[in-house]
Image 1: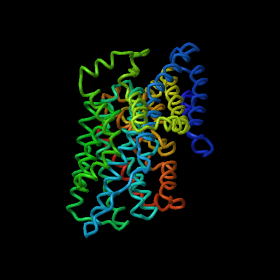
Image 2 (image 1 turned 30 degrees about the vertical axis):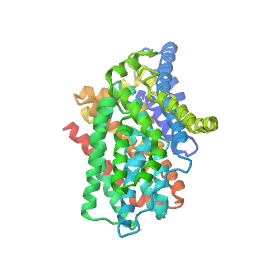
Image 3 (image 1 turned 90 degrees about the vertical axis):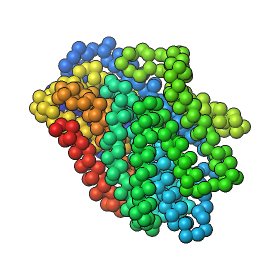
Image 4 (image 1 turned 120 degrees about the horizontal axis):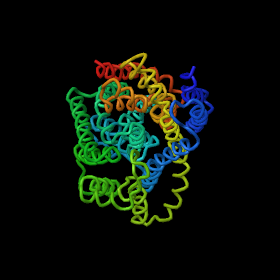
Length: 485
């Protein structure tokens, strides 16, 4: 009976989402509202009003450290993007036209889209991909799949804010968790790349075996660069620092621009080059990093992320947006964009606060550990399979890994430690299961349909994606089984 009470927040969250009448923010609020009385009445640990207040404040602090990534990334994207938006260069008027367009498809899905998603979040990667590919006049159902493929590096999306949040729940360094995420993400790329190949052929853009090998090599290069950047720079800026130079190289290789075209491209992208360079320096140059980290740092909780205003990537995003507006003589545009950015960012920011508070209440009350102990007592090491499976379901339902991580990450870490498994590997599996599988979320599908003018095509797209969803689930289940054995 007690376990049924402890599972009430999860049930409330799932029912709220499944009803179709609640936003993610409202569902998170209802889950938190149900968790508080359950924790106060049935907590296996000492948990009264004082402990509740501390847990809520800890959750609020986690939200404070995450919010600047969300708001700053959105403001910077709006100010840094050229007024005309991204556009594709006219392909050469020759037999190479088909190959140039095919290469644009690949770059939009696996380079430009992920870069935009990492810098901003909010599905802006899908927006950038669709904007680049719209001149090709692709069928809406195919364009929807290409838009979704921009989300394949989602653990590094929105400046890695989801991964930072998961690391806070798991009480481990964010770089350690993100590095452990690379293996499952790389294996899933073995599914996303064939999906791209099949969709490209169905859209009329077939390619030679040589071109397929080149695309495979680019994916390997991207993953290798991302691994190095994640280990040395952390997940916040790893993808934009790794993919920024690769995008430049890819553009030069594919388009071979003349001097005038190169100058035009630099005018368009200089804010991103400047941001990537500055963020890279603050992480790569150890004395500079230590100096920035020592100035004004606030760390009220030793086991939670600190706030270092001069080192935090969110501060650089907001400051970068201001500098870009001033450099372009568009100070008035900054004031016009801020209300819209806050309107867009308000709901996800509040959702982050609520989920962080929910996670801290369940953890402080001892419920997360007690559930982990109970599951482990009955299933032994096989209990660690439950959290990733449930995370996949919640990821699809909520279009995010935040709900699953807030509910299950603490239990997953506890069970992994009891079973003698790699805590980082199992936490990464839990995180990737919830975030990567959200690619199949109805919410994300609706966004892709709206951007691609494909409303009404969702069923057709889902039918085509089903084998790849099953293959993704099989890969994640195989990873879990491999970890156990």
